[in-house]
Image 1 (spheres, helix red, strand yellow):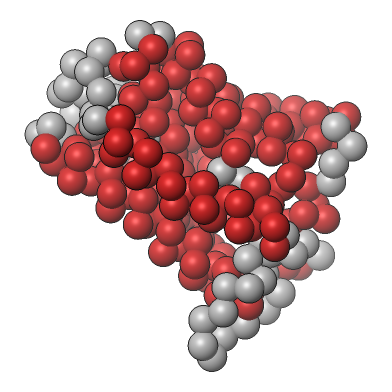
Image 2 (tube, one colour):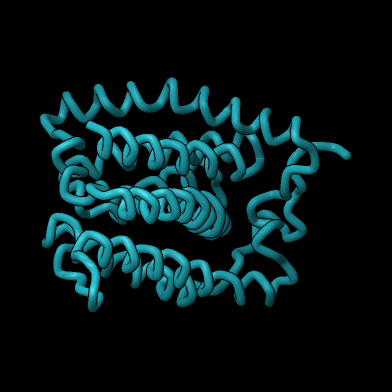
Length: 236
């Protein structure tokens, strides 16, 4: 079967949901970003019986899947599925490795680029991540699940849902990519001024999704970057 992205069954110019639904989707993202900005992570997220770091991981997991669950019924009402918004699934092993290669190539270009930008802005993403990266084997295991969740959920929300919404409202895919990148940066409040760098990465991921006509390479790239970041921090 063809490995090309499956075109969305909906008309590109139509929003997936009304404006109030998008506000509903953005509210938990904004709350989480503001809380993490003030707390430099989520050290005050206390789940009984576990550490504050693990509490933060589970809080983020719940938040991200909650946002996806908000989007799911809106897609159902339009006769769409989560898979349609992602633009299909891998039909062959070769298709998977092709997207994996694109994801790795993206990281080879994007990671040094955003690293240089962070340096020029005088920020240090490593010191920011030091508060949230895993310190124990069990935390690393949960981090891997968190990385996979971030790769899938955040790409679905920002490069999928929000890009479609912004594209419909502005009539421009370019503006849609720009706006979703801005939203992506603002959603990472714990980075403070490095949020600008996250915006740039959001734009790059948006361009990747637009070029590939699929979220799959971006999901892999996003998840891999988070996995590698957590593993490197853990062993160093």
